[in-house]
Image (cartoon, rainbow, N blue to C red; front, side):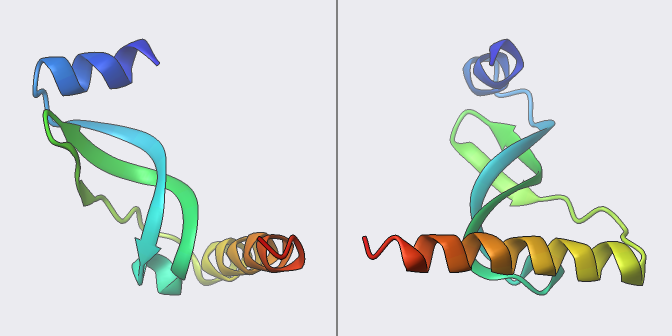
Length: 76
């Protein structure tokens, strides 16, 4: 938490793993998942797409889809 606060207060443009809505990163849409983002005084500035193997990307997408399914089942 301290690193996140420092990144915002100091506008350090630090690369931090934080949760945010994904818009196509790694083939995932419309779910909040933690990935590396550049964080500065305005919050999240951009994603930093780390290279994933095909197997890692498939696992990431499966995890994101599991989260989406759980959210949908909550009916909120």
